[in-house]
Length: 364
Figure 1 (tube, rainbow, N blue to C red):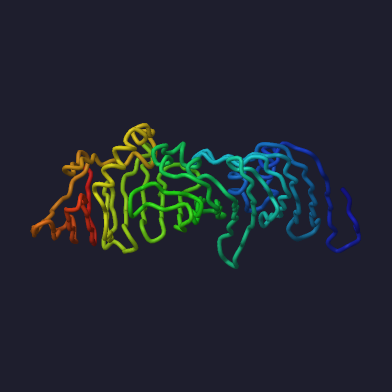
Figure 2 (cartoon, rainbow, N blue to C red):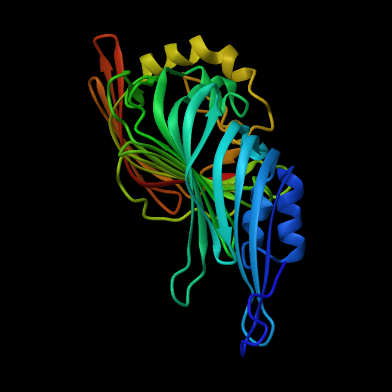
């Protein structure tokens, strides 16, 4: 601690130091003392376990002006857990730099599901806008292991490793977001058409949700041009209370409300026989899924000879049906639905064609 020039009009008090500390204690200290400026939410997220070597340089104007802080944390074999989504990064090493405006790092390395990943940290602060700190991890991963704790039945339908990116967006004041994305090259999807994929094919996958996994959040799920879904989570039961599901790449003409599932879009080929056989093969795996799982809690009881709703109903539905040999068609209208469904039988196949502006299911 020293003052370089006491005769200066605005002398500076310089404080420098270094130490080895537990990472969690250091993050708490930076938050409680306010040394990290406007980065309080970042410190809440960075719940690191492990040790670090810290270097601090603190300049305090003795007359006027704001204090200036520059620091660096040399992370030594740390861990970062995202409990709400069962994600854990271990063996985190590298240099995390910070000042009162935010954090930055580009050479942090870690292990994720026994695979090497790179981690970058960057704070951006546009003029007059809210600052954001982005934590980005990228590498190779078995996506089935990522979702296994949330839904083991769904995890069984994926195999192989694919490149992935986990992005945590931490705004200065508003809620943080978690995004998981992948090209799925290297992963096989074992569903029937149109949600199947070979290991070598590319199919963009994107999932975005609140980072904390706490009350009242939404989940946005995209599978390139095949499926788009937005799920709203109940604040206490953690079950899905409403959903917006778009088949194909079409926009739905109606938004979902509370206790409502809205389905729309276009699929030109669904083999009911193939889906029936797939369902029977995987019934046991899906039945083992946790009843409180976000992805399994939104249920419709299905029978393949008929579609039976035990919890959901369609209100105000007009059906104009016609049959011509092996082709059955239904023109749907009314407040509950708009669109066309056709069903073709023959050659040991039962082909369903869906062209819906929307189909609205309400909780019974």
